[in-house]
Image (cartoon, rainbow, N blue to C red; front, side, top):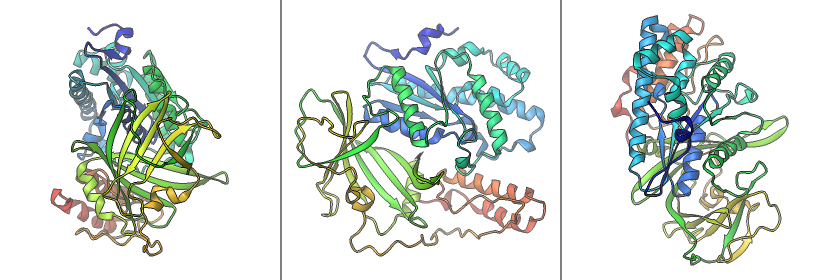
Length: 473
């Protein structure tokens, strides 16, 4: 038997002084879980926490070629039962690592045990629990400290509902709403269930998520995560000497901009770490118009080292690579980041020092007294990283050239009755993701309206030749 609700739902403190907080990100399709996981990771790593990101077990299995229409009823039941076992074993691996850590640990689970119950009839779920010797109290209330339900974009943000960001997602908007309701009901009863809806824009939705975790942990972040908080940037004259009382975390950061079609979208890669230990992020920033008002939407995805080097082949030749040392610290309950542009950079911005913070204050902001501030540059586009990294002799922006990959993708018109995935979008799931995308493309072409067997054969021929040797660093 597990410990009581209250003891397990409270973040654990150990004799060596570190804490472990286990949070589940759940919700319907296209709710923002991938970006949320990346945002939580960046925020808490900047605070000096160790962050473990538990991958979604269902995606791992489904990307291996599992297709539910091909499974019998018994096969589906056995798959769900094995999925639950797989999920718990993967989670346990990270939980065991957290037990021996020397610092605070945040474990972010992409879905949790109770999510499986949303895809089964009640009697099927109860049978799985009996077969595995489990009960809802242990695997729902005792296993995790906090559950955050991110509401699907299909409820309140329909403009942004898309199937493009998941190789295994196929739900239409009505099914997405239904699944969102079922998943939310599955977690009712957990003592710390939070629901983050779409009543704000996506950026604010992500801030509310981070704020919910900070509130649960009792972390004071000042007004950084407030609804009306804005980023402010300041130019610093010289590298300061930090007082001994100010604890800071340093990270080495490298940014590369990737080629895109048109100026409306910016895509960049980030390599971030210390002592040769790295994490990698793929960010897409685009501007959309909603009700006549322009909004900037930013989606972040944690990627593997392999995917990072694969995507580097798409570097924009009109931009330099940006090298920074990022120093993160708290001062008077206000969180700051000092970006130090290192000697590896071109002279255009080598040695530049830029301080950033998020705050609700629009006028006079109290800044650390040990910093020599030259001026505020919040609204000065010359100091944006995108413009700083642009080469002085760079030609006007032109569309991305065709990939030099040995695999040439042919554009296939499948008619109005079917929709083919956008294979031209950068692949961020490695070989397995590419194979899964191609398999889905074959399925979509074959089932669109039943008259595209020739096109399906073209796509199938691609899926048959993709293997590990086709993706290189």
